[in-house]
Image 1 (spheres, rainbow, N blue to C red):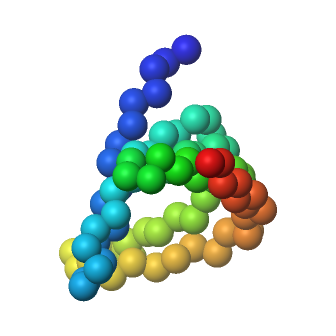
Image 2: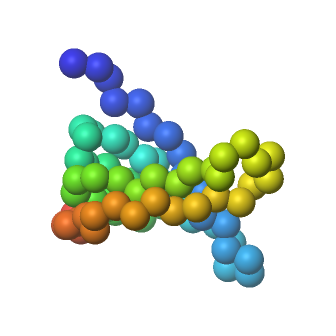
Length: 79
């Protein structure tokens, strides 16, 4: 089994400062966010994903959302 290597997620709020999370991808359907300052773990489970694609050969940054089925996400908060 491969080691789980966390990535860091920074949420930058305009006037409220920043929040920092470590992201752990457990498997194809489970992601955990660990809030480093409070020690809270948020676990998200579900299937499928939302894919965003660029239009054709355009060089701009405009993207379109593809129509995928809605995920059944179960949010669990562990303290």
